[in-house]
Image 1 (cartoon, rainbow, N blue to C red):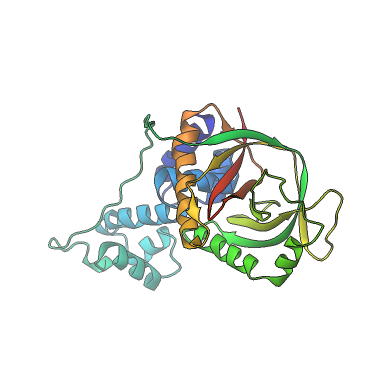
Image 2: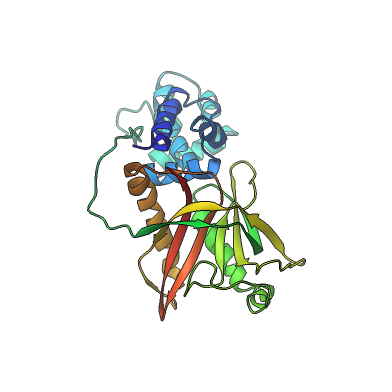
Length: 297
């Protein structure tokens, strides 16, 4: 088991020991010695829940015992992090299908959301095509959107791609001489994505879509960054129809899930902090997604 996974596992115990205290993604990421984005990735793909959703469900599950211990509804609402009683009532009722005032009725049933206990199991038997590749420093140009590290992360990054493809300026850039095509290898689309080319605000991801600048070319009208020299592990997804892009978010999610809950736990490599890349390998009418994750061993 990698050091990253061990540190991550310890945060699950921390959540249980401080469930009704002010715990945040930023705090837990710091304890695990990971960036918020990396911690969010591990949490989502190892537990099957976003951090915020997991903590919310655990609190609502345990709120029943607090109410039965004769804490007031207002007190429990505050302990669970809700701004007011009404917001707590709505969340509690949605989770348990009863109101907080009904918890002592012996005829009602409640929902229990148990804490996750991390156990390392050897699964194996699944082919995960990948390669190790080192890239030199390079410049990128394009568009960037700040998206929240929450349950809608995948939806919001997909929206960024739709905005990118619909932007006439990006089309002009793609056809200009300042763009370097083939930087990531033959048959790669000229456009790609970068996660956090610049340091994001707490609880957010800076999601960039754009191109590689050619040599010393400049594009003063557009946002640009320098990506440092780095070694990556590169994973390839299953092929998909380029005329059916609606499947891409699901393929993206599945590939990340296998990377974080299968590959990293069972190899000697650790994820480095630094920009992650997404490239696209064209194969006639089909294509596959490639995920580039910075690593060390």
